[in-house]
Image 1 (cartoon, helix red, strand yellow):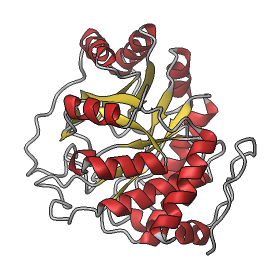
Image 2 (image 1 turned 180 degrees about the horizontal axis):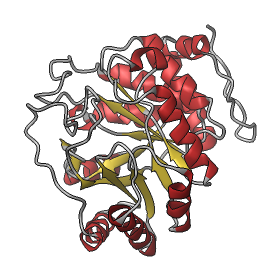
Image 3 (image 1 turned 180 degrees about the vertical axis):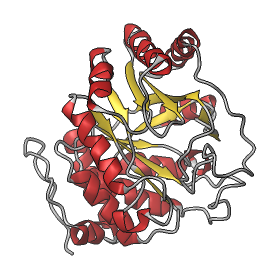
Image 4 (image 1 turned 90 degrees about the vertical axis):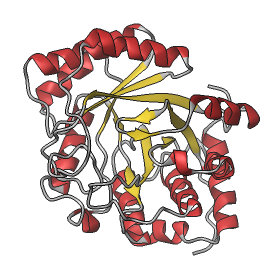
Length: 324
């Protein structure tokens, strides 16, 4: 497929990408792909503006889902992980305050639930959202599936975004998850959109999927109307005791291709370098920023997996002249 010209920033983003189109972009000779994605990025974003977000586990472990990559699944008995109850809202708001002081403008809260249940625990989450918003931060939660009235409560509390990843292509999905269908995930996205909450929705590479699966994931994301506000691109972090503990690491240039293709397909989205960034060299991270990544998760942990050290992030962002 020949090099495609970037669409003007004023043109509405496409929602009719085909898998073949996106696969052709993904497999474009790398220097051409970098040039294309960088031009799209600069037409829609300030390339030096890199948002720092913080991801915090408000309820850890014991999840009834069987996601093959996740150490929080109750199905993976060999994983050494403490199961905790939901945290006190005051503690969570305190953690958000620390994250803001360290430069984060978005605070993301994750609970290892299959779905939201009404009651005291959900009431606590709503209180957390209000507390984070009161500090002038963007708020995001990932709580599993939810019903329309629950989404409305989160919207009324001022929630900025709801994270619910598609993870991979519809075709590959059944090889990593058996307890929740792909349609369940799409239905949850529809509930979030219906409440007027922005979508944070992305996926994971490095689980054994093909390039076509990666293109199909991006096609499903780009078919959302509107596009997700935030698209986290994760690379698998193999955790001992999970079914994917022995998966080989992702080649960094494959991540660059994924970020670049996401940027071209969804030009207005925040493309977030998420799990797995700790294993990237500074040079690989810079390439990802060049082709369209404009957000990172800061802090030493992403839920239960390690992340880059704060000082290293500060030094890297200063070196490339980035600003919030």
